[in-house]
Each structure stands twice: as C-alpha cells, then as structure tokens.
Picture 1: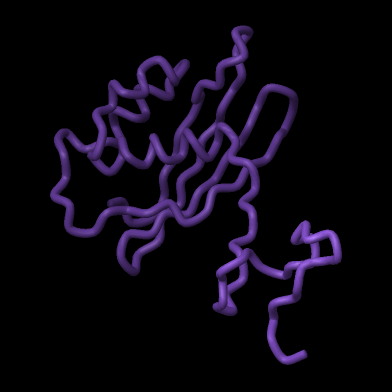
Picture 2 (picture 1 turned 135 degrees about the vertical axis):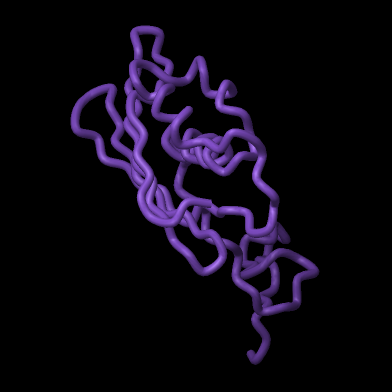
Length: 140
C-alpha cells in the first residue's frame, strides 16, 4: 500500500483512518498546547501596558502593594508608535509555595530580546493579583 489513507474497517465506522476524510496533504496536526495558566494571561496584559498598547489603570484591580507603582514607572506616558510591536515569546513559572507564582517571560521586539519577571499571589477570594514586576533589557 503506497498511500497514507487507510480504508474504513468492516463496520464502516471510520476507526481505521489515519487522517480526516478528504485530507490528502501530508501535514501533521498541530500538537495540543499546554493549558494556559494565570501567569500567561497576566504576561500578555502586562506586556500591553509596558508597551503602551493599554493604559496602566487597566491593571488597577489586578495588582497589590507596590506593583501598581512599579507599573506607573515602567509604562510610557502615552501610546508608543507601533513600529515594532513586542511579542511574548515564552512565559514560564515557578511555584515557591501554595498560592504563589513567580513567572518570567521573554519578549522580542524585532531582533531585540527583553526579560520580564513578576509575582502573582492568590488572594482569599481565589483571584490572582500581581505583587511585583521587573523588566530588564531593551524595553519596547
């Protein structure tokens, strides 16, 4: 047998197919992505704020302690011109204890790479809030 397609089984259920019906190309299905956590969600919003795409106050209810003041210092005063939009390349996490996530992210802006780190703490209401933010490298 030279083709990639197999025939249906004797019951006609289609259980013996190697690819969906009608698909004749050799592409493989995309691997399922790992489940996204609160650190991924927050990294995207944080990047939008420090790059000037969203206002700082959009994270007001999502920060605690000095984190909001840190964001005010990190974010530009107004929207930046959209020449090269920063892209979140990777976001990882570490759980130092229950209800705490220390996350890190790589951000690419053109051929430049920056690092972003932040700490999320889970409150009694089970909501995650940012407690600290730090950015190193060329900023967007």
